[in-house]
Length: 628
Image (tube, rainbow, N blue to C red; front, side):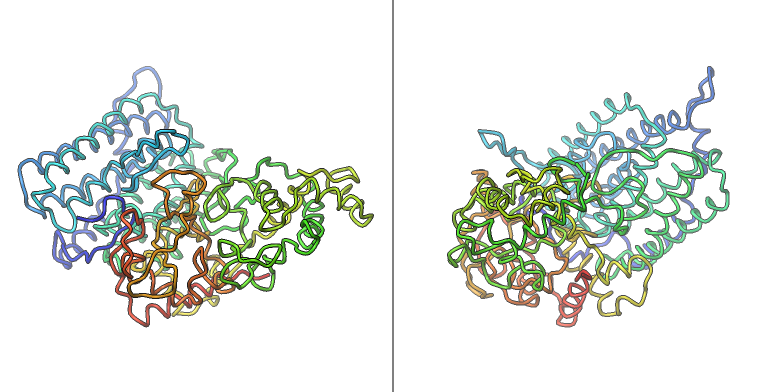
């Protein structure tokens, strides 16, 4: 049985409920039948004799019915587990229950995100960091059950599978009770539809939420059909009928495309995203505007009017700021840039931020680990500062939430700058050259300590680029990537499982589509660059700040943007090349090179990448360099 704590796992996936040909025919047939018109939906819902029901009321009633349908499918899974040990029967019913969930996922995630996690969250233990007892919260839901019945079902797992199915059934029951009180709005619904489309791209087709069975492609039709049916509830409000027709055609073609290839490893994700997912997002925006439905307004990393995940202009570099004050940001960034290169902010006036974060080296330093104020080796590798604003926490051990606090901590660290924001501001204020810059940024010639950090943070947020060749390709320039790089992207999103931790499009650990948290992983990084009989690096990572046992050897998932410029790699700089890094993952992380680490969250199974596939992956990663 796979490690209970393993977040993302791989299996050979050879078991099938049907033969390949039969599956293709069945899915193609399904693609032609699944579209239910809005009129059909309406006729099945209870009629209100007192007034014409609002679209949201119709959707709310349908949502409650669909939750009950999910409940029945989970009950069938429970009965199947009780009465049979046939792997095919059990797996088939499991997949049916998952499909029932996918039909309502967009609404569950919108109104009940906590229950959504209980239904389809990652199968990994968690602990509340502020819990003094450090009580472990075990996972529940589909992914836990998936571990117990894939790739084959064993009678030894029957009792536990029944127990977990019972927990899932209870969660679905709570979902039905709490959902009776939803206050739906049209704005929320259209927002949820686009977020579900983004969720499909970033999590669904990567196998993030079905890591062992790897049947994600067979769920595409359920997600898209749910979007289709919901949009058609608004058909009478949408003035642009041609836009509806275009949307219908794109969506039907997307389902047909997915039905033609359900194999996890060979599925062409780039084509699916480029030809179907991105256009569907754009068309949803057009339909919402045509229906005169206001866009949901909320401050978040990805703006509510974004038509796809790959729209750089819709990412806010100030979302994770301590104070989302965007006044005078140009002047603040100008001051911050000068301070970034100013050695006076260090204790002995010898080093600046740019000493370790060198622009010509991708704002890293090219060394195995950083060097401090006295040129002594620091604990960890120096990360890039490009796109640093697009993550929920900072430092390799995730100990700080805001850039301003990170800057102040680095200045105060005895091994790094050995000063303080107060001392640094005092020295800066003695220089006439800064007085005009200070006044333009903050309205006063005298710079306050907190303002020093704020100015440098403004400059760092200016380093949010998202303009690599990959980005150009995703925005329509089909000359930006070659066929090898496109193959590398498909591997990244599929067989190589990179995208289950380095989420598109930011390629860091900030989880889409809500982008509210940045994940940490336990990889089993070795102390030396060997692939045989390796020993674990002694740095305990996140545990050093949280003292939570479950966080031992956990490190924040860093960005892979500009990764070709920022060697060496890993938190300790153990690997010099991207080829070495890929080989580490290919072997199954620490577990594959001789390190016994029970809490490893990286898949422990080898990826079985060919040499050509490894080359393609490296080529794609090199295409993530931003243009500066």
